[in-house]
Image 1 (tube, rainbow, N blue to C red):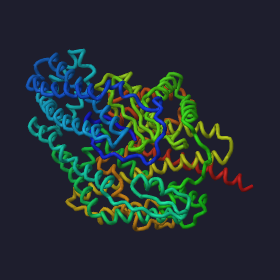
Image 2: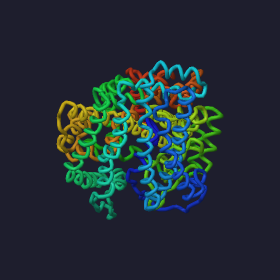
Image 3: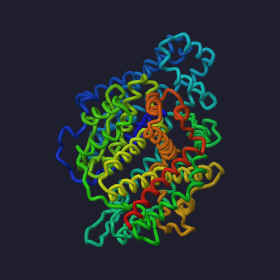
Image 4: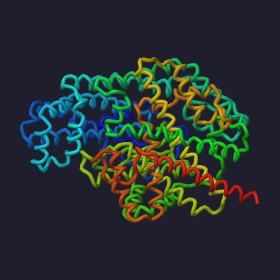
Length: 625
């Protein structure tokens, strides 16, 4: 998962305030080399508090520019320098607060820092809420004249033009202030979901066939749903999803409130739909979203082919939802950290010596919190918020291949941030998730290519091919299904309809059955798993998940060109990353050669999946002889 700063700096606060999930794995010795060094951000918590106090003192001074933006180009530059200077320091504050909390979620002082910063962020947003309406009142002709007359405004050109582009959806200063303050309320459904799903749900504990006990909270479900014994997997599913059945109405009320919130924001800003409002933040054509959904449905036979192959390799004729998660091939091999680093570095060689040198230096410096420890945030992410310092990565490395792949993924994000921070001034360094996930999944594609080359036997190659195939399923088809669900529930509300828990279950269940070939006998969807919508936190992020699917489609196209050694492929790709947020993300990707509003990249991804399955079937046929 990638933490990003767009479309506004304060998006970071959503992550800061989200309830954390403690890691379930045992602690490792705390070797300082494997723990990030937060003193590079602030010497100690007292220094952080002092910096926060300074920012708090400076925020009211933003009002000194209210009513003055049209005075001169010099005044506009001064105002932008002041506001963006505060934003940069705020990003550094947010990074420290977030990382210090996530390394120990039981640290109440660290939690208090995030809460303090959340309140300060709201004050920041309110204090600067006059800016956009006032700049629009100055008038486009005059503002463009300022941009031409003052060289110091060059770094602000794209952000200022974006304000002008948003004129039809920008309200007056007073209304903008009210909307900024309303963010304290409109974020409530997500907070409610997080507390219920991660803290207050009475999770079950079951006994498995070997006598061990499995506590099925969210992290426990992720672990135990892939156990080898099929009866155990079914028991895990039955116990876990029964709890979501018990709270179906409550989760339904929370998600309905979120969708209404999205619709409120869209209508208040005079958008025809919540989808249009969400996409317009980054200037994404609606054709991207709708083409993704249409092409995913058109290529469902590829997904169904994968499920049939999975069933064949697992020896299961009546495939069910609990048969998706166990690996189709086991790999009895460990990847200690040093070996994992070496593999990832070797895999990145096609991106050039400069990229590899920066990549290697980042991996070996103290910017990664590597191993699980008690009360540490689970999962993995990259945080790029400290523009003047360095991206940081959280992992929970377990000496397995998935950990190696996660390292490649998260440091793909990290390298994206390094490249854009070195190439762009702060105002245009923020990049969209629309491009961000291309950088991470391309690194995974390069890792797969390398692992297939160094694998000593077909059995190991089968494992890597199977892992890649499952990654494409989960990142493309599953996320596209989520995107279709989001579109359906928002359109239901926009037509004046309601959304109860059972209604959400019906909509999601119909999608599950279509995507998984239920009616064709490919994979049977049991009623209990149709409440999976209540488990997905991304539905509280307003048309967010589709970008995982578009990004992996684009990254496969870029990876193919790079691995083929096409002239200019590396420079074009890295140039896209270095562009940061200096243009609309769709345009950046299109100029680099991939148009995500057309069917081409999605069909190419399906072709890649079929190619991987061809390789797997060839190995299986060879093993039969």
